[in-house]
Length: 87
Image 1: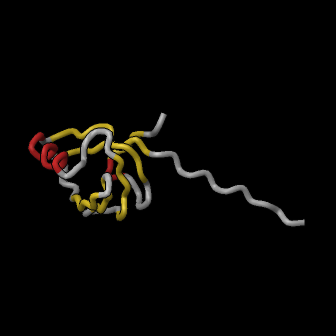
Image 2: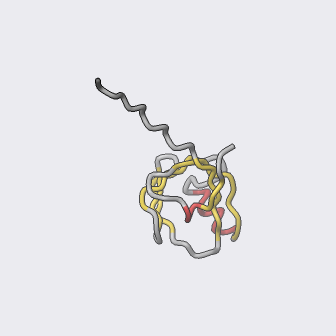
Image 3: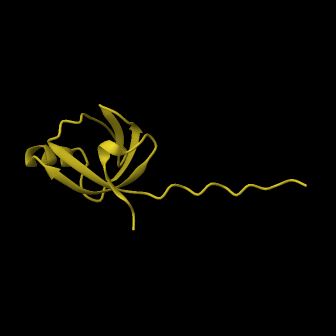
């Protein structure tokens, strides 16, 4: 099972799938109009406040205001390529 974390704790380059949006219903509705809804794929382009992310090919800038919490199931980090020793 994937680790679920709040979006504001994700790091640059991390990605996952939105599993829940909690908080102000009006703001959640506005975010949904921009493509940010349960099941959407999200990639963090720039961590911090504001946070810049890509949601299903739409670039969004979000400020942490505490009115909406976005929970994301992280994708597993790609396994590093095995190293080959030369003899």
